[in-house]
Length: 592
Image (cartoon, rainbow, N blue to C red; front, side):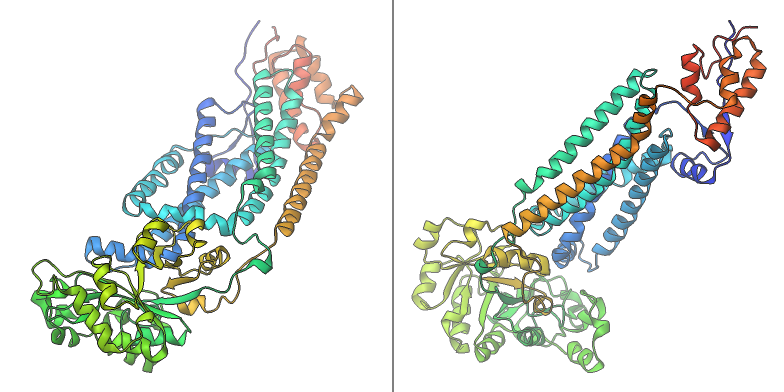
């Protein structure tokens, strides 16, 4: 008995050559192989799928985190001291990485569809395993970990649609699974391991499909409700005015917010060295004023160390034209650009008078001055005095500082006592607090539906505004009143009966398509078994009788047989060889 080397057959097929070339860097010629994917390559395929899943979550995270991009940039500024839009490189890298991994996933599925080995090139392995997942997740989790809370909230808006998208994708995968099962069924009598793997894949696929069919049982959204139960549209408070249209915390910004029909104005307040409360978000003046040009030696000093005369002399608008933090400057008219460039630092009294003139609510966060500041002990009384002198009705002011609330109630009993901390209802009642000012990710349905008025910040995206509207929130604070103004109704709202109808219809359509695909893919197998016989071409008949021929003649006939199978689509030579006790690849059984 003589054992020969395995037969290697090469074909000129451009499409398959591109698949194997891009995926595994096998460009010179396409090698037709009947071997199974190795265990290591199968493991790398699982790693590739896991990487794709992570990047899908990553891409979804940044898509929904758009609501807080300005907060992220401000966070980076406080760390680096330089203002830049840090979301641009992250978004570009995310888009490139997701496109790259998604392309590799498509190539892998194409390999499975045509029944070829999965042989991922080492360069793809390094990038997929290291560069596109771990680095990004670790870095963002360290600098912006609290933002992950946006995902469960966003799922309330996107859950039903993500479910339908996943159902369509998994239903489409039925073609690959059914084809794999059909191929394995045909050779199962010769390869028990392949048959076992196919059964596992089939069971896993059916489990995922069944899970998707039942997934709506776990999907909850406040927007799945009867239309009659929808609460009135939440009031919108302009956070720092309308900072997308004008420099934050300036009179022009608040005027633009009033033009957007907001119900209130929100600001960040500090106290100057001579006791004048003024509007400033940052600890220093470097980002939002020209202090580096006017007072270059003091640009890193605390904003409260300047007196009001010096503060009022600074320009608070040129930075907006230079940095263009919201990409809106290019759409401004020349007159608007000149108006923006001439803004100055705004005092709290100016804001209160503007709000009183339009009968709008004012809410502000008051920052205590440094320890050696002249107003360190009198900052509460100084602020209350400004409120009194402004003439604004006390019920229009939401007072947030927790310090000396008892004294504040005695001096100004009409102020709306507001807490920025999530406290139990009994504590709120004992302290006389009638409203809450919380980040949108902190509030629970119980907080929203309690007797305490809740204002959530910062809400800039229509999808988030819609979810909070359906939840029954009374008011939101927004940096984008110009955007939320265009949302007169929740983006989507459906009754439970309507959603149930969509759910059942989608499941029935998917089940019908999956059954049809499996029947179609396995039709020739069923027909082959019912017929009980094979159809062979002349080369197969000659090859089955080749046990007494020379190995050279057998090799020639095998090459003819393989090419005739490709052109005619007849039965597999491997089956014929096995039936005659002949090894298809090693020529076992051939004797001289």
